[in-house]
Image 1 (cartoon, rainbow, N blue to C red):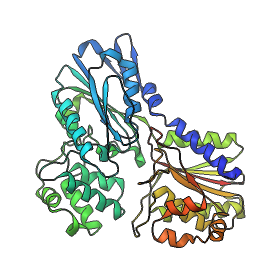
Image 2: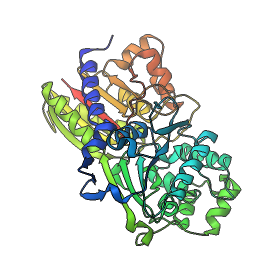
Image 3: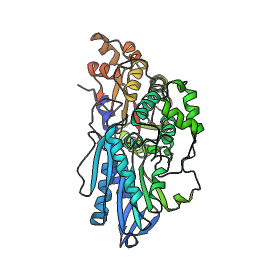
Image 4: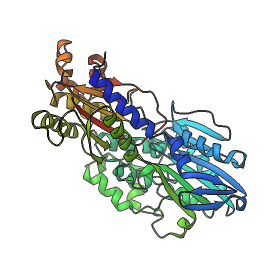
Length: 437
């Protein structure tokens, strides 16, 4: 049975999820008014377009496409969305293709080929609306020769396991892809492109979200090679991937390329909006609230130590704010795989935090992914409390051993504390909640 503090942390987390609803995010930025389409501050006269298509990828992309369908109705010619298994839904005019994440699979490649074909067939008098959300990079795999899907899977797995950041992973992805790094915009040119983007990336870098299929790419083959060297994995990279990156043939389109003259990229939602909603909910529950950062990065267990230290400081000195206190952070951590257990970055953060707040009364730390899935698990994250370790040890569970094996899921499954929301239909990175009552 969750404690009162755990229930309050879940209420705050759910408020963040509500604010990240992708359908509402699209409808807030895209409007129809007397034959014109308003996208942010730009206006498009719909009678000037012969065909309107929608295409895209991501865990929230189906709900985003549903919002586009609601607005355009029969004016929409059709399209295709790639989304993660379990995140699909029926759309009237847009096909939905479920595929693999975080490791791309054959379904993803098949869907990406169809998305590329939709873009390529669009002409000067056509409009392509692209919906992109978290997970789009893995969910839209279109390997560029001589790279195969197997090569791309192996490279993605290698970079995930060595603790590379999403910025670094996507830099490599763009240079072994025929669709990422602005190349979808290149395929669609000279059609008009409006990209609606739900950001799950720290700092909301347009070229990083979904590996920027409609965005100029400032990164280079040399940058991708440097990432392999940084993590000392050059010798383990599949040979076709290494040959392509070392060969440095046709680069991704760069800033200033005229193909982007007819492209609008519009962020419709982000981690900041979700964290702001969490703050409002925490305040309504009576907590003094402080948002520390929405650009959080770093190794999950190290970030956990910082959150635990803040909780201790609040308990001992009332700094940076006095109890009842709520500290909020958002962003995306990483995990360097050392063991063979099951878990995700949020569960690992919560497990390390449980060790750090051991014995602290009236303290809870929640870490959760807004997409409802953390790593290859059915949990969004986990909640740690000052009593978590005592409860676990009474059941014969040793937290340090589970942490050493990256087995946070099985720890919280037995000790209690897993957060299971199911797929949320959105994805704006992760949220951490520290409560001190």
